[in-house]
Image (cartoon, rainbow, N blue to C red; front, top):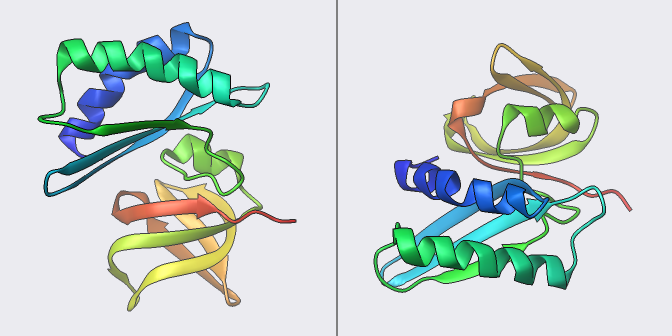
Length: 151
């Protein structure tokens, strides 16, 4: 996570948790003059539109006062959904036994994209079984990972 993303997370986490939600993670994307801040929240009871609106209102106030994002930006508050992104090793541990897709920042064994079964966490590495091969993917090299939903 970038330094700016960490700062934004530190600013909004108390407000999200005070409302009774878990801050699952956030994506901060800046492309030229267009900036998007997508905040994922979760709850044992699930997340509805009213929950997203309540959290959006709460964190908008904090972001307006603290102003961690230069210029205009779009704020989206959402449930992580069935294809939820994974941000922390603790979240990966919750989904051991699930299928996940992973994109790395730099190639590992000649590949950047992996799709397979999450089989564990070992010494800060994500253990993924794909195509009958076990990979130890360095957590700090993971750019993006999502749970692959089963229907």
